[in-house]
Length: 636
Image 1: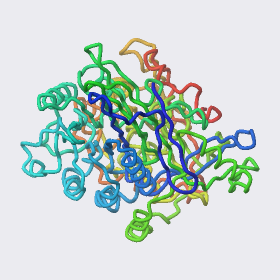
Image 2: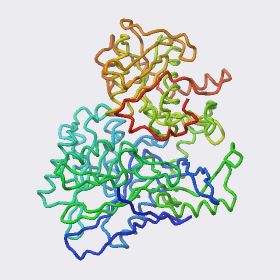
Image 3: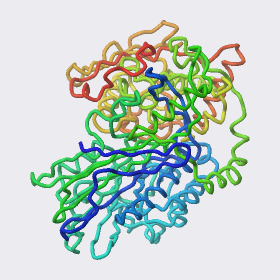
Image 4: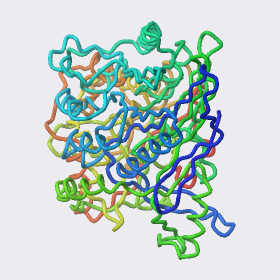
């Protein structure tokens, strides 16, 4: 992995300067291109919190600050373009998809807020993310018609869809011209889009590898030999493209939320165990290489890479991701309560940040902040204020007001990596499904849902409260309908094994989270025998009156309507159901709110409950596990 350095100018804006780049072009066969990129911004108009470690007076200090948000990203992208122009360097600004979903802003504004704000960022192109189709084709088409940059997807076939085929701003590729040099940029979206989102029935999504090679070949026939792919297929599949396709010079990725790079200097470890930033992957011809980059998620970072081409092939690719932060630093001086830094520590912490290459204090863009505060915030304030309860995790001395969420045990996404038990937040979401439906007399035996539908930790706000707005806008923002599927016990066992293995190999969000069952998944056992000691617990795992599942007994399972249709690896819900799926009409986030309110009325807080899972990772998955374990003191 090649690295260069980003520097942040304190209290002003991030000014990105890559060192060691030769912009002279004495050899006409050499071409230098600078790419700035973001992905999976998920309607994160406002900043989110970020913890990092700074050297303050020769001591490590744990600091929490505000990070990212659309106005900060806008500043960074604009400054990156200005710096490139000043250096007379060709420049591209790309978005790796998934602008939709993720916050109350999206719940209220749908795609309109994203269209308005992204228009101001100077993007050259964006890939289509799976969440762009969550509300069907209509809101996405409106978004595409409003933005001032093309949206790319070479493997989307909209020819049979009369409405989508008429959207001229959705293209397979574009060709950017820099003098007499042409750079092709094409998009690639998930070939299995229909299994994880809700695109129109008449849309088709073609194979990723085949489409990538065909598109490269077509561009090369047009005389374009410098080719960038902006993708929304995830890091694993980006690597597969690089290993399987000749001629893709750079892949700007998204979907897997991977903040590539080494962040050990600020106490945040490596972004990925399988790739670094600007990872160079050898193509199948054995000679050329593809540079792969990705910039995390929720608008916290911007990536920037300088790419040097010689004779049309990538010679060097250098750069890094930069976390965009405020200087509102707070620290637990007393070990319990976070307080603003004292003046001397603040100065030392700011100086430390200024010396790093991957974190920068960055001002917000004034125009975007004004649009958000004046036009959008009043529309969502009514959702944000309703207090429904409090969160308390006695096992976590670091974040007692938070129940951590992970998609896969042992792989950090938001908080702890929870390598044995899986998601603390998911356990309560599943429990709320059972509670709600049984309050209505459905008599469900258990809940099994996908961790990808749980979008965040469950956590208190600054005042120690859990609000309805957080549940709707951050925890369960898809607003899925609760459904009931009936399966035999043997098929429940098979469903659990299938979805876990599907998650470990194909789609991280398909990993199940559940209520009223407990079992061990032994990934080292032979396939077909990996679910061990599966028991049904009618009153919840914590009650302890569990009994072995009966293979021929019919069980009613609460889930969400999306995966009840067999999507995201849950084929058995569709193929083995004993009766038609029952759609309850109740929405998951509303049910979660009522569940928390019921606990509050009973004088209880939302506390950690047993997940029911004991996870033993397959040998093939062990390389992806966090090492060391994140928040080890909370992995119980």
